Image 1: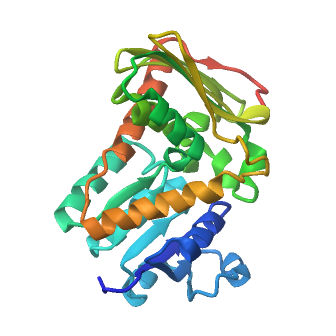
Image 2 (image 1 turned 180 degrees about the vertical axis):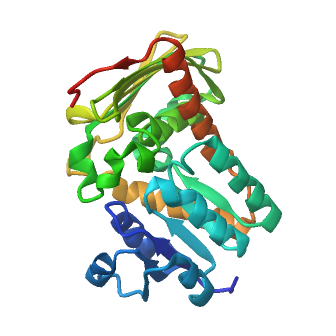
Length: 312
Protein backbone atom coordinates (compact mmCIF):
# COMPACT_ATOMS: atom_id res chain seq x y z
CA UNK A 1 0.00 0.00 0.00
CA UNK A 2 1.29 3.45 -0.89
CA UNK A 3 1.39 6.43 1.46
CA UNK A 4 -1.02 8.34 -0.77
CA UNK A 5 -4.74 7.83 -1.42
CA UNK A 6 -5.99 4.25 -1.47
CA UNK A 7 -6.28 3.10 -5.05
CA UNK A 8 -9.74 1.51 -5.24
CA UNK A 9 -11.10 -0.63 -8.04
CA UNK A 10 -14.85 -1.06 -8.55
CA UNK A 11 -16.35 -4.31 -9.86
CA UNK A 12 -19.92 -4.07 -11.17
CA UNK A 13 -21.42 -0.97 -12.79
CA UNK A 14 -25.06 -1.64 -11.88
CA UNK A 15 -27.53 0.57 -10.03
CA UNK A 16 -25.49 0.85 -6.81
CA UNK A 17 -22.15 1.70 -8.43
CA UNK A 18 -22.97 5.40 -8.84
CA UNK A 19 -23.08 5.86 -5.07
CA UNK A 20 -19.60 4.36 -4.72
CA UNK A 21 -18.22 6.45 -7.57
CA UNK A 22 -19.64 9.63 -6.02
CA UNK A 23 -18.33 8.75 -2.55
CA UNK A 24 -14.87 7.96 -3.90
CA UNK A 25 -14.75 11.54 -5.21
CA UNK A 26 -15.57 13.05 -1.83
CA UNK A 27 -14.14 10.75 0.87
CA UNK A 28 -10.59 11.86 1.71
CA UNK A 29 -7.74 9.43 1.15
CA UNK A 30 -9.35 7.41 -1.64
CA UNK A 31 -9.28 7.47 -5.41
CA UNK A 32 -11.07 5.47 -8.10
CA UNK A 33 -8.26 3.68 -9.93
CA UNK A 34 -10.20 1.32 -12.24
CA UNK A 35 -13.66 -0.04 -12.98
CA UNK A 36 -14.81 -3.44 -14.19
CA UNK A 37 -17.99 -4.83 -15.71
CA UNK A 38 -18.21 -7.97 -17.79
CA UNK A 39 -20.68 -6.28 -20.19
CA UNK A 40 -18.63 -4.28 -22.73
CA UNK A 41 -21.66 -2.09 -23.47
CA UNK A 42 -22.05 -1.09 -19.84
CA UNK A 43 -18.32 -0.45 -19.60
CA UNK A 44 -18.38 1.73 -22.72
CA UNK A 45 -21.15 3.86 -21.20
CA UNK A 46 -19.18 4.49 -17.99
CA UNK A 47 -18.30 8.15 -17.46
CA UNK A 48 -16.14 7.84 -14.36
CA UNK A 49 -12.95 8.46 -16.34
CA UNK A 50 -11.21 5.46 -14.75
CA UNK A 51 -9.55 2.72 -16.85
CA UNK A 52 -12.04 -0.04 -17.65
CA UNK A 53 -11.80 -3.82 -17.60
CA UNK A 54 -14.18 -6.65 -18.45
CA UNK A 55 -12.21 -9.15 -16.31
CA UNK A 56 -11.80 -8.47 -12.59
CA UNK A 57 -8.79 -10.79 -12.34
CA UNK A 58 -6.96 -8.83 -15.01
CA UNK A 59 -7.85 -5.61 -13.21
CA UNK A 60 -6.49 -6.99 -9.94
CA UNK A 61 -3.25 -8.02 -11.65
CA UNK A 62 -2.71 -4.85 -13.69
CA UNK A 63 -4.28 -1.84 -11.96
CA UNK A 64 -2.09 -1.66 -8.84
CA UNK A 65 -5.02 -1.65 -6.43
CA UNK A 66 -4.97 -1.26 -2.66
CA UNK A 67 -8.67 -2.06 -2.33
CA UNK A 68 -11.69 -3.36 -4.20
CA UNK A 69 -15.35 -2.40 -3.97
CA UNK A 70 -17.69 -5.17 -5.14
CA UNK A 71 -21.16 -4.19 -6.40
CA UNK A 72 -21.60 -7.09 -8.83
CA UNK A 73 -24.54 -9.55 -8.57
CA UNK A 74 -24.77 -11.54 -5.35
CA UNK A 75 -23.81 -14.87 -6.92
CA UNK A 76 -20.42 -13.46 -7.97
CA UNK A 77 -19.43 -12.02 -4.58
CA UNK A 78 -17.64 -15.08 -3.21
CA UNK A 79 -15.43 -15.59 -6.27
CA UNK A 80 -14.52 -11.92 -6.73
CA UNK A 81 -13.80 -11.41 -3.02
CA UNK A 82 -11.65 -14.53 -2.87
CA UNK A 83 -9.62 -13.44 -5.91
CA UNK A 84 -8.93 -10.06 -4.31
CA UNK A 85 -8.20 -11.35 -0.81
CA UNK A 86 -5.86 -13.99 -2.17
CA UNK A 87 -3.77 -11.12 -3.61
CA UNK A 88 -3.83 -9.23 -0.31
CA UNK A 89 -6.24 -6.59 -1.65
CA UNK A 90 -8.72 -5.15 0.86
CA UNK A 91 -12.39 -5.73 -0.02
CA UNK A 92 -15.56 -3.72 0.58
CA UNK A 93 -18.43 -5.85 -0.67
CA UNK A 94 -22.10 -5.01 -1.01
CA UNK A 95 -24.40 -6.99 1.24
CA UNK A 96 -24.86 -9.89 1.25
CA UNK A 97 -21.25 -10.99 1.65
CA UNK A 98 -22.06 -14.16 -0.33
CA UNK A 99 -25.04 -16.34 -1.22
CA UNK A 100 -24.94 -18.16 2.12
CA UNK A 101 -22.83 -18.77 5.20
CA UNK A 102 -21.11 -21.77 3.56
CA UNK A 103 -19.64 -19.34 1.02
CA UNK A 104 -19.16 -16.45 3.43
CA UNK A 105 -17.25 -18.07 6.28
CA UNK A 106 -14.30 -19.23 4.10
CA UNK A 107 -13.90 -15.62 2.93
CA UNK A 108 -13.55 -14.52 6.53
CA UNK A 109 -10.87 -17.18 7.08
CA UNK A 110 -9.06 -16.20 3.87
CA UNK A 111 -9.04 -12.53 4.92
CA UNK A 112 -7.38 -13.47 8.21
CA UNK A 113 -4.87 -15.76 6.47
CA UNK A 114 -3.88 -13.05 3.97
CA UNK A 115 -4.11 -10.22 6.54
CA UNK A 116 -6.46 -8.41 4.15
CA UNK A 117 -9.50 -6.38 5.21
CA UNK A 118 -12.89 -7.87 4.35
CA UNK A 119 -15.75 -5.44 5.03
CA UNK A 120 -19.45 -5.80 4.22
CA UNK A 121 -21.19 -2.56 3.23
CA UNK A 122 -24.25 -2.29 5.49
CA UNK A 123 -25.02 1.22 4.37
CA UNK A 124 -27.96 1.79 6.74
CA UNK A 125 -25.52 1.82 9.69
CA UNK A 126 -24.37 5.21 8.40
CA UNK A 127 -27.83 6.75 7.99
CA UNK A 128 -28.07 9.97 10.00
CA UNK A 129 -31.44 9.00 11.52
CA UNK A 130 -30.11 5.60 12.61
CA UNK A 131 -27.13 7.33 14.21
CA UNK A 132 -29.50 9.64 16.10
CA UNK A 133 -31.61 6.71 17.30
CA UNK A 134 -28.54 4.79 18.44
CA UNK A 135 -27.51 7.75 20.53
CA UNK A 136 -30.97 8.01 22.09
CA UNK A 137 -30.89 4.31 23.00
CA UNK A 138 -27.60 4.53 24.88
CA UNK A 139 -28.12 3.33 28.46
CA UNK A 140 -31.79 2.41 27.91
CA UNK A 141 -33.27 -1.07 27.96
CA UNK A 142 -35.16 -1.97 24.81
CA UNK A 143 -38.24 -4.18 25.14
CA UNK A 144 -39.52 -4.23 21.55
CA UNK A 145 -38.22 -3.25 18.14
CA UNK A 146 -39.77 -3.34 14.67
CA UNK A 147 -37.77 -2.87 11.48
CA UNK A 148 -39.74 -2.18 8.30
CA UNK A 149 -37.95 -2.58 5.00
CA UNK A 150 -40.59 -2.18 2.35
CA UNK A 151 -40.31 -1.33 -1.35
CA UNK A 152 -41.31 -2.46 -4.81
CA UNK A 153 -38.21 -4.23 -6.05
CA UNK A 154 -38.86 -3.58 -9.74
CA UNK A 155 -38.54 0.16 -9.09
CA UNK A 156 -35.22 -0.25 -7.29
CA UNK A 157 -33.57 -2.94 -9.42
CA UNK A 158 -33.73 -1.00 -12.69
CA UNK A 159 -31.76 -2.88 -15.32
CA UNK A 160 -30.29 -5.22 -12.67
CA UNK A 161 -32.87 -7.93 -13.35
CA UNK A 162 -30.72 -10.52 -11.53
CA UNK A 163 -32.37 -9.39 -8.29
CA UNK A 164 -35.47 -11.32 -9.38
CA UNK A 165 -33.54 -14.52 -10.14
CA UNK A 166 -33.43 -16.51 -6.86
CA UNK A 167 -30.36 -18.41 -8.02
CA UNK A 168 -28.36 -15.23 -8.61
CA UNK A 169 -29.78 -13.23 -5.72
CA UNK A 170 -29.70 -16.05 -3.18
CA UNK A 171 -33.45 -15.85 -2.71
CA UNK A 172 -35.55 -12.71 -2.71
CA UNK A 173 -36.36 -10.04 -0.15
CA UNK A 174 -34.95 -12.14 2.71
CA UNK A 175 -31.63 -12.75 0.96
CA UNK A 176 -31.11 -9.21 -0.31
CA UNK A 177 -32.93 -6.77 1.98
CA UNK A 178 -32.83 -9.06 5.00
CA UNK A 179 -29.11 -8.48 5.64
CA UNK A 180 -29.61 -4.71 5.98
CA UNK A 181 -32.57 -5.17 8.32
CA UNK A 182 -30.90 -7.88 10.41
CA UNK A 183 -27.70 -5.87 10.66
CA UNK A 184 -29.68 -2.89 11.98
CA UNK A 185 -31.06 -5.13 14.73
CA UNK A 186 -27.57 -6.26 15.75
CA UNK A 187 -26.08 -2.78 15.30
CA UNK A 188 -28.62 -1.33 17.74
CA UNK A 189 -29.21 -4.26 20.12
CA UNK A 190 -26.38 -6.76 19.79
CA UNK A 191 -26.41 -10.44 18.76
CA UNK A 192 -29.78 -11.71 17.52
CA UNK A 193 -31.44 -15.08 17.00
CA UNK A 194 -34.38 -15.96 14.73
CA UNK A 195 -37.35 -17.32 16.68
CA UNK A 196 -39.98 -17.70 13.95
CA UNK A 197 -40.51 -16.67 10.33
CA UNK A 198 -43.04 -16.63 7.54
CA UNK A 199 -41.91 -16.18 3.94
CA UNK A 200 -44.29 -15.61 1.01
CA UNK A 201 -43.09 -16.41 -2.50
CA UNK A 202 -44.46 -15.61 -5.96
CA UNK A 203 -45.07 -18.15 -8.71
CA UNK A 204 -41.44 -17.85 -9.86
CA UNK A 205 -40.15 -18.87 -6.42
CA UNK A 206 -38.92 -15.42 -5.40
CA UNK A 207 -39.73 -14.46 -1.83
CA UNK A 208 -41.66 -11.18 -1.94
CA UNK A 209 -42.68 -10.78 1.72
CA UNK A 210 -41.38 -11.99 5.05
CA UNK A 211 -42.34 -11.56 8.70
CA UNK A 212 -39.45 -12.54 10.98
CA UNK A 213 -39.44 -12.70 14.79
CA UNK A 214 -36.10 -12.42 16.59
CA UNK A 215 -34.69 -12.03 20.08
CA UNK A 216 -31.81 -9.63 20.68
CA UNK A 217 -30.43 -8.42 23.98
CA UNK A 218 -33.61 -9.44 25.78
CA UNK A 219 -35.80 -7.50 23.35
CA UNK A 220 -38.55 -8.87 21.12
CA UNK A 221 -37.87 -7.91 17.53
CA UNK A 222 -39.99 -8.05 14.40
CA UNK A 223 -38.52 -7.57 10.93
CA UNK A 224 -40.98 -6.95 8.10
CA UNK A 225 -39.71 -7.25 4.53
CA UNK A 226 -41.73 -6.57 1.40
CA UNK A 227 -40.76 -6.41 -2.27
CA UNK A 228 -44.33 -5.64 -3.42
CA UNK A 229 -44.97 -2.53 -1.34
CA UNK A 230 -46.34 0.55 -3.13
CA UNK A 231 -43.77 3.26 -2.52
CA UNK A 232 -40.98 2.88 0.01
CA UNK A 233 -40.72 2.58 3.79
CA UNK A 234 -37.42 2.08 5.65
CA UNK A 235 -37.88 2.67 9.36
CA UNK A 236 -37.08 1.42 12.86
CA UNK A 237 -39.47 1.72 15.81
CA UNK A 238 -38.34 0.97 19.36
CA UNK A 239 -40.20 0.77 22.68
CA UNK A 240 -37.99 1.07 25.75
CA UNK A 241 -38.56 -0.14 29.31
CA UNK A 242 -39.24 3.42 30.46
CA UNK A 243 -42.23 3.64 28.12
CA UNK A 244 -40.63 5.74 25.39
CA UNK A 245 -41.34 5.06 21.72
CA UNK A 246 -38.40 6.08 19.56
CA UNK A 247 -38.24 5.96 15.78
CA UNK A 248 -35.85 6.41 12.90
CA UNK A 249 -37.22 7.07 9.42
CA UNK A 250 -34.22 6.41 7.22
CA UNK A 251 -35.75 8.39 4.36
CA UNK A 252 -36.61 11.48 6.45
CA UNK A 253 -35.43 14.76 4.97
CA UNK A 254 -34.31 13.03 1.79
CA UNK A 255 -37.46 12.59 -0.30
CA UNK A 256 -35.74 11.95 -3.63
CA UNK A 257 -35.50 8.40 -4.99
CA UNK A 258 -32.57 6.70 -3.21
CA UNK A 259 -31.51 10.14 -1.95
CA UNK A 260 -30.47 8.82 1.47
CA UNK A 261 -27.88 6.54 -0.10
CA UNK A 262 -25.52 9.38 -1.05
CA UNK A 263 -24.55 10.17 2.53
CA UNK A 264 -24.75 6.53 3.63
CA UNK A 265 -22.13 5.39 1.12
CA UNK A 266 -19.84 8.22 2.14
CA UNK A 267 -20.09 6.65 5.60
CA UNK A 268 -19.40 3.17 4.23
CA UNK A 269 -16.22 4.21 2.44
CA UNK A 270 -15.04 6.39 5.31
CA UNK A 271 -15.27 3.40 7.65
CA UNK A 272 -13.71 1.09 5.08
CA UNK A 273 -10.75 3.42 4.66
CA UNK A 274 -10.35 3.61 8.44
CA UNK A 275 -10.26 -0.17 8.66
CA UNK A 276 -7.75 -0.53 5.84
CA UNK A 277 -5.39 2.04 7.30
CA UNK A 278 -5.83 0.62 10.80
CA UNK A 279 -5.41 -3.00 9.72
CA UNK A 280 -8.81 -4.10 11.07
CA UNK A 281 -9.11 -7.32 9.11
CA UNK A 282 -12.07 -9.07 10.73
CA UNK A 283 -15.72 -8.06 10.27
CA UNK A 284 -18.30 -10.27 11.95
CA UNK A 285 -21.27 -8.44 10.44
CA UNK A 286 -21.23 -10.08 7.01
CA UNK A 287 -21.27 -13.70 8.21
CA UNK A 288 -23.76 -12.90 10.99
CA UNK A 289 -26.26 -11.48 8.50
CA UNK A 290 -25.87 -14.59 6.34
CA UNK A 291 -26.54 -16.75 9.39
CA UNK A 292 -29.77 -14.87 10.12
CA UNK A 293 -30.88 -15.11 6.48
CA UNK A 294 -30.32 -18.87 6.49
CA UNK A 295 -32.09 -19.27 9.83
CA UNK A 296 -35.05 -17.29 8.51
CA UNK A 297 -35.48 -19.61 5.53
CA UNK A 298 -35.10 -22.68 7.75
CA UNK A 299 -37.57 -21.42 10.37
CA UNK A 300 -40.10 -20.56 7.68
CA UNK A 301 -39.83 -24.04 6.17
CA UNK A 302 -40.25 -25.74 9.55
CA UNK A 303 -43.19 -23.51 10.45
CA UNK A 304 -45.09 -24.10 7.23
CA UNK A 305 -43.85 -21.53 4.76
CA UNK A 306 -46.59 -20.07 2.57
CA UNK A 307 -46.10 -19.99 -1.22
CA UNK A 308 -48.64 -17.72 -2.87
CA UNK A 309 -49.27 -17.56 -6.58
CA UNK A 310 -49.25 -14.09 -8.07
CA UNK A 311 -47.75 -12.18 -5.13
CA UNK A 312 -46.42 -8.88 -6.47
